[in-house]
Length: 172
Image (tube, rainbow, N blue to C red; front, top):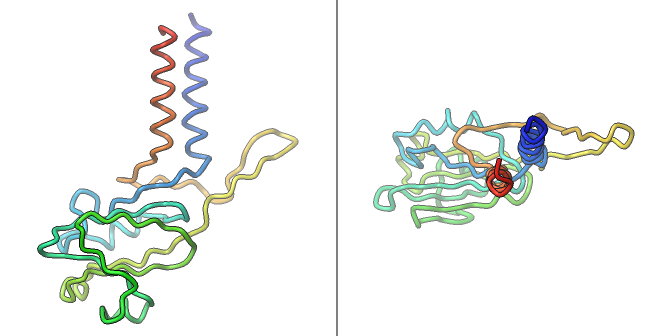
């Protein structure tokens, strides 16, 4: 029985470690439970995040009061100039894939909310690089892992679910 428990612990540890090291995409929910809203401290939320290529960013807002605009450059972002946007979002639940490195500028479609700080520059960093060390057989991550709060690592949850089902099937 002791060997079976050790085996289950080893499987769970391996699954969780693989999910974290593999740099699975993170789903960032802007403003957490308050969403994209003037009452949300977006600056504080943003300062605790690391955005990487492959992540997704989710904006939720009341369509009667807000919208979302992606701007072309820092100047338009700083001045809240909405006259030449890349894209306007008005659905109330918008998912944006972060597909390339660089900075993307998101602001409120309400000029007053934008000028009051409802805007974020999203600096997208490269994916975490994994390098195998042939002589040791272990992995090293180029950049330190990040675990932003209120973000969901869907692959990690999938591994845990599979391990849990395996345990049930083995009758442990």
